[in-house]
Image 1: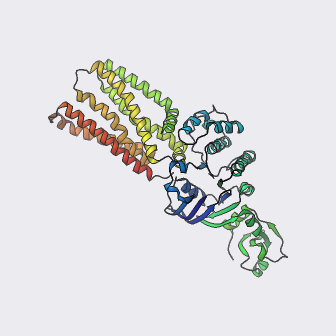
Image 2: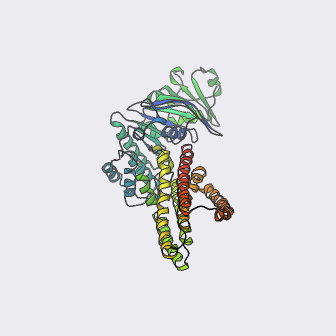
Image 3: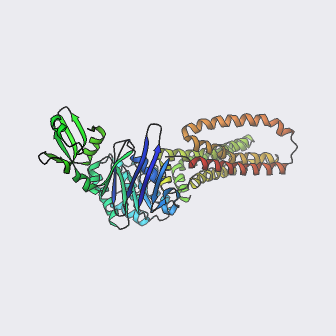
Length: 279
Length: 198
């Protein structure tokens, strides 16, 4: 559904370089990476809020910069700062967005507000962060889209609200012909709902893998320097040396059976890639 | 466009009412002082300031990113701000016309038309700067622009007095120039907005 090919975007102190990945129909793709890794730049490039310096972004095979308004509105979105007018209440917002989105569904918006327990006469600036994010998701789900893109939707929210949001994404994706791209550095959320994980580090895609395969392929091993020296170098992905010992992110199939390990998490992978060393 | 206008009216209704009250008040002052210039000035101020206020809200809310992601073209977003300025220039024009009808009916027609054109010229001059530099810097440049225009205007005044142009010709030229300036300003603003990133 969405294809990003060789995306390049240069800023003064930062670049996205040759970023490529797909968001296939019917999947949830998680874009993970540290703060400042380039997740938001990629998402803003897809949404047309940033102009890439190179590469291609295709939606159903068509370049996104050539999409008509109706085609572009098949991509719904939740921005990290929501972008909604803070002086308005949700009743006003409903009238505004009915004039912005061609397929705005007022009945659906109303029912989502009820479901999410959002007051329609309170101004958005008086909402809590969780309420604002729920309102942004209600907006994104109230017009007929096929691709939902979310930039850090669960950041700074309590576990209850985060769970509600993940539930809504799960429901959205259950209908056929839809897909979700979600960026977050709260990787536990992504482990729950994603089919694919794309990891971006310092502007470069490190891997793009099926989540289950990824979590099965790697493991974390505790070693010492002597054991480390004896290991198959192709098995070791990254080494993290700490005061209390050395940990290794390694390919499970290539490691000796005698080594004890713990299953890897997406947090581990991010930590190893950002702080670990190669051997 | 309709959605954007509704949003801006919700956002700026307090300021809009304030300007409407100011236009009414300055209309009254013009009548009392028997000088329509007061009424003309507030109209110029309103037509330039209201779109600026609307843009300031958009910048604060991050709406411009939302609009881009929502598929709204640069042309639509920019046109709506010009329309907002033109709507308030009409409101200012109503106040000015009332004041002029009461105190200035014997004055030359050109003197009547010039401030009305200025009310349309004001957003045309200001909006490209605001789209280019944003509200904070744009306001500073706007003040500099006003000073430049004032100096040019003062410099040209003696020439205007000496020029032998008939009233209808002057009004026609002024009206055409206003339309052309608005159109060129709009094109420049769209070109600037297309290059923006959010």
